Every structure is written in structure tokens, then in C-alpha cells.
Image 1: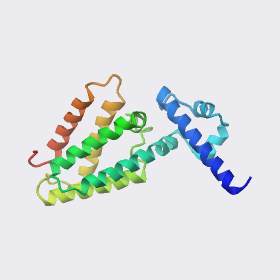
Image 2: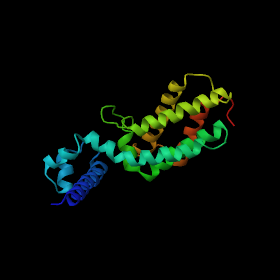
Image 3: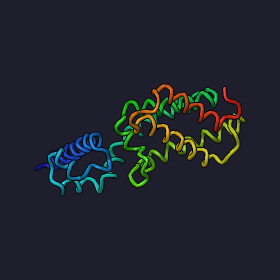
Image 4: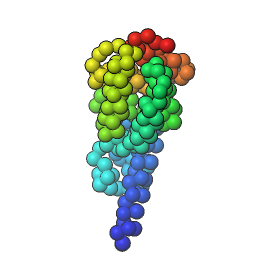
Amino acid sequence: MPVAERTQSEAQRRQQILLAARRVFDEKGFESATVSDIVKRAGVAQGTFYLYFESKKSIVIELARQPMADMATRLQSILDGTESFSEILRKFVELGFAVGEENPDLCRLMHMSSDKSGAAGEFEVHREVAQMAIGMFQRFMDSGEMIEMNPGIASEMFRTIMSGAMQLAFATDPRPAPLEEMKKATEMVVLGAFVTRPT
């Protein structure tokens, strides 16, 4: 088989496994799903799975890579604006909920309560987003719009608040409140935590 065809079929097989895993995780949840379930759904041998992925967790990381990269791009456009700190934080929260609504199954996987299976901190792009947040917090501390604190700690606190909100909104059944109400509550928590004079 020519190299180009082999490469294309390998890419297709990898995609086939990813799509099967996404369906299995959505039906059974991460903890209950097995590699056997995934390969059965994909129609490949179990050994084939391990040619492409080392574990269930690694496949979750791969599934979430593109939505996280899209989020980083959209976040950069928010940070490039000239709005106040309060408005940027509101847009940040809005973006988190928008990405969750666009990918609810992946949001559930990424924000599971179990630390051993949650994958939100496993991406290079997550580190990129964290660096953007640190820069944002430093910028608004310098302008006096943000409460004084270590910007690295602020970034982790913000991530924890958002992860908790995403878990409640997309990984809790039934959802404790309508999505719009949860978004507004998250905005209030974030503004109260970081802004010197919320507007």
C-alpha cells in the first residue's frame, strides 16, 4: 500500500475510534465505559486502540483538544478588546458556557468531579489559556480594576470557579437551575471575587 494511502487509512481509523469513544462516553459515562466498548463500537481490534491511544483518559484529551483550541482563539479576541475588566470577565464566562453548550458531552467529560478521570488540565492549550488569564489579571491589577493578588493564584481560582460552574451546568442531572440563571450566578461570583468595583 502506498504511504499516502496508509497514512490516510490510519487517520481514518484514528477518527473512527475517536467518534466511537465519544458516543460510548456519552452513553455510559467515562467510568463505566471500557476500551472493549469503544473498539466494539468502532469495529476495530483492541490492539488497534492501543496503536493510537494509551488509555481512556488520553482519548478524552484528544477529543477535547479542538474545542479547547477554538476557545483559546475566541478568548484572545475578547482579551484584545478595550472593554472594562468587568465586561471582559462577563464575556469570559459567556464563552465558557457557549463552548459547553456547543459540546455538552465533551464538557461533561472534561469537568467530571473525579480528579483521576477529569482531563481539563491536561492540554498544552490549557496552559496557553492559563497564561492569557494571568496576563489579563496582571493588566487589570495594574490598572486598579482588580483586587490585588498573585495573578497565578487568581488564574487557578478562576479556572476552579469555571470548572465548577461547567460541572453543575453540564455534568449534573438534573441541572440545578436553568442555564441562563447559572451563567448569571457564575458572573456574580467571578465579579465579586476579582473586581475592585463591579460595574
